[in-house]
Image (cartoon, rainbow, N blue to C red):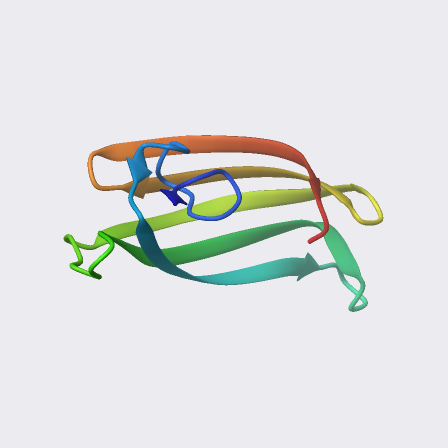
Length: 103
């Protein structure tokens, strides 16, 4: 199992942590701004935090790996957004840039 990627557990490079067992959870809040008149803007943001652990085949767990971050979203057209995320973890930081996300 791998822990870390640009989609699942941001803040760690994909493949940096490998173990027979991995457990992770991420909470994320996304918000789109509104224009005057109550219509949604094309701009939004997200904040997220998570925790992951690695373990061997006997479920002996190693120390926790936290991750936190924030991101900006811009809607190019309906259901096609540009996302820029900054995430950090233990001795690790990452910036992600992606075009394929439905906010």
